[in-house]
Length: 246
Image (cartoon, rainbow, N blue to C red):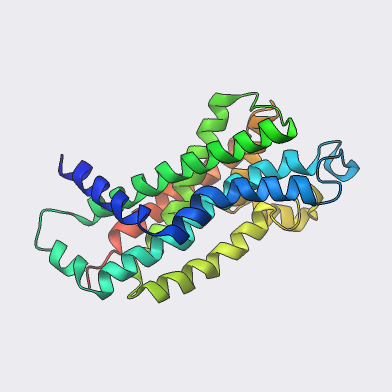
């Protein structure tokens, strides 16, 4: 009951931030729409993508964008702000544990990530005739692991930063490299082998590939699922152990 009350409170705090709500919830779908309508050739088969269209590939990248924005840009500053203004110090005198506080943040941001993904998928399917995921169960598993692994990194940053500005700085420093590895600027299918190997070792690179494989019916490779799981467990453990109240 106390955890659910904490989740509701953190949810109310989140929706009062229009910038975070826009970029975390709405922007991924808008990116798909904008690229689909205004980027030349985005809706046409491309030989470098093995006959797929860019809109087919970038639908999964847009989902990853929403996950990364919520986990690395909006989440760490919230905890940094709580620490800077002594809110965490006051919580320390209550039964609220670090794990419970981090769990509440994880739940709130995960709900928004789900809604963001639904909007992005709906935009791709309705406006550009992208097929719905052919293996929805594996797609869901891949999505959950991508959220858990990326959010774990955001929670670790938030567990240590002293201010919201520090949260933004450290979060953004991780955000852009992970988006590059996810294929936001260079599609993973055209990455050189060495760069692709590095991308596979990142939670967002493996996440995009697992989502794409599930979407087009082949199913995710075990390697990509294991990589995301390891990131989620290892970094999530560190976030709880290294959390500081002040």
